Length: 533
Image (cartoon, rainbow, N blue to C red):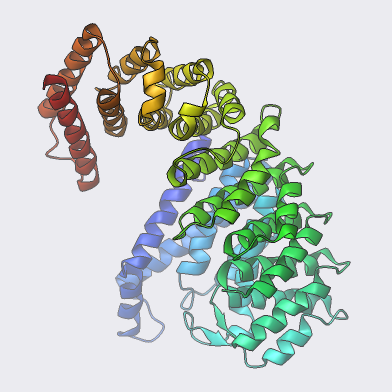
């Protein structure tokens, strides 16, 4: 994590350390180490807990050092983000009660420096962690770690957040309010409305720190609390105001507030919709990218509701509709997030609507097809979107653009990463599910070309890719007609893939890998049965 010359290795190392620490915390291993320490001599370490404490100290110091080094060397934000995620695990998952130096003492200098980073998303992450550290060390949270402590004087807290004569105290109080949203401290229900009302004045403060603190609280409250419609309407108006703020960090938070208001409300608040629409077109690429990401997350959450709110879905369609023709010239940072939001919306539409698309499928499909020539992450999103559009509205499309899209997806099966290949196979499986589309394309060679591309990856060393290809071919055999030569070739490839799986040794495979291999065997066996029956 500190010294490797490869950036992906450093990013992955930070992620692995965070996952290991989280798993150890969830599994109870770190708690057992602490208990063994307290059952021998108070505030003394046993051999086991001493090693655990040493590990925490080492990792914590390494994170601080890496953050400062990455700032000095202008490393890409991917590394900053991974290190901040690891810092979040340390702060929120690891107890520092028995350590000589607390988390705040070690991490706060580095986080303070990172909070001034040029990327608003990195600034926002670092600022949230600083708020969490301040909340842990504030008087309102004194006492044993891990216990949710009530704020003893709620009225005073509500008064302090509005006291413009004490700006530093205002910022600290907003940090406590954010901690309350995260469940780290306890406040009574009536105080929630009082704090919420206090944001009206704070977000108009001339002090950026006060505005950021109030906006952070507003964002956390909309996410964490079940707010009535009148408070959501108020948050919607605030989002529109904050979308005009000069500070890009605040505009990023405004996008999150707006998308969550749309997602959580029983009706569409026009102010939130207007704010999100404006922020997706923000001049700052980082703000626009964050806004598209917030939009995609809100789409994911909204469509998982039972039943999904159609008015909410239409609001998302309206926002993307205005940006769909501008995706090509966008900066990469924006384009990745915008195409992800587009793919997420198309996936959701294919799952929720059976008759027709709630958008213009022809123009959206053309945009997706054009973007397949872009970088890997944009390409993968475009393939997902195209597959969903073909599945949903293939019968509404002209033959030529449908053929072009399927050819573009099929081309992804070669010279691409396993992730891109899996997405392409899944997109073809979805498209093959549209019987009207397949009937229209049956006289054309494009289906045989797609089948050949899929057959070529049945023996892929990536078993998830092999599974996806087998399922896509099975779907095509159910609805389409391939000529004898292609069926013969396909049968040979499927039998080769099955023999390869049967001949491979899987006795030493992990449980997760064994499940993946079993899924591939089942899918290829089913395909072989179809081809030989």
